[in-house]
Image 1: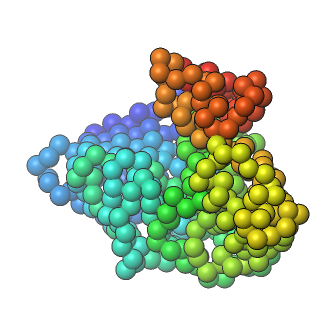
Image 2: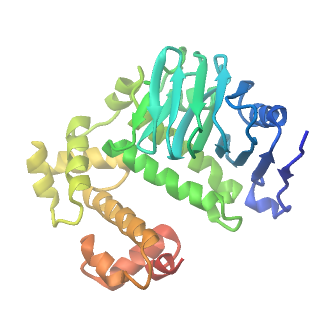
Length: 335
């Protein structure tokens, strides 16, 4: 055994469970690490003559396990039916070949792999560099949460479709939320690490996943949405997502979706707990944040980014941005 485990420095209990930064150059030890964090599995290395390294950085988000996994060489991971949990994998870089039961997909940064609890799984790849986000959601937690949402017990395994297109409007919004969460989980001083925050964050992660993915309980969730039909709300979201920088009114959206203004407002309030224009502001803020994160003070200016995403008043943009992300836009640009 290599015992290449990086232990976290103990912190304040108010910050919640400490992250686990785990490293190994031994295949058996790597298998043990993966089993302890996720599931019992077989780990096969394609080239036994190659140097083997595995790296895991895992965080507890309430009852959820959120972690990144990397291998430096081609491996194949096989499990029996997960049984105890549902699971989602998203390559942050590269791609992986994977399956849940007989359903096979290529997982990429734009296409997540979803795994049912009642099917065996296979993941293989890492022949080229790949860093994968792995989210484990305990079976009882997710099924109880879904039951609470639809108002009746969940008696059968949630039959998720095996892939989730992260370019779809709702899935894209859910994934934007996850990207922000992942970034803040790595910060020991972040508010999201506080135990009082983690339960509600986990609920949001599960609700967003259930609403944006396909499964047999999806109609039950949509039937609970009053006001504008889910199709009309989704169409409004698609319109805003396609060109959020353009000026648009609620009346414009309602007309384009074939519903009344009041119906559309009620639909957004029921679905997102915000108005259509608040939702549009959220899209714009997320796009602005993404541009600021990838820019630099030498090539970008906050005022230019704000204007590009439809914010005409720089001071109001800065205030809204700070309220949403906990820092000024200039701080994001300098980081």
